[in-house]
Image 1 (spheres, rainbow, N blue to C red):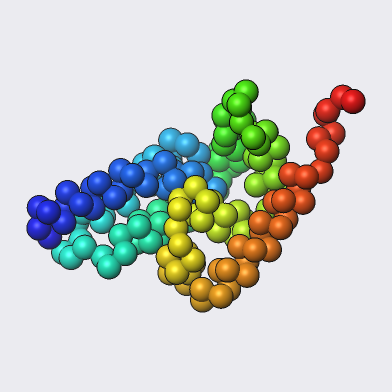
Image 2: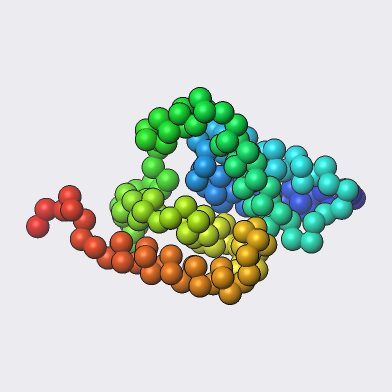
Length: 167
């Protein structure tokens, strides 16, 4: 791979790192998510030729590595369950935010794993439907339909009044 390709791929990966880490967080803890993203970048840079779509390639590599890591041992799965229960929120609350971070996180967690994965890739990863279809190995219309359904589920969850609000 040429130096020009290496520089370009490194830039693409750096621009997408936050979304890739969030994507990996669906299956692994924050530290492991960082490792999974780094491993994917190393694999990408070791390729003889740059992939046609490096962003989708990275998401697929991160997804596969995260799955492999998740299934590596029973002990690790138990530990990840404990970490997941005590993990930091996915979003940071801000006074000027239009969306409550806690409500958004709860709404995302209420989605089925496949739907949450798709939403994270589309919204935070900024992947197109074709790229997502490539990562998930499904058709573009399937991705589009699942995305519309998942957005509807999120919308309904976020429109419900918060049970902890005092009126």
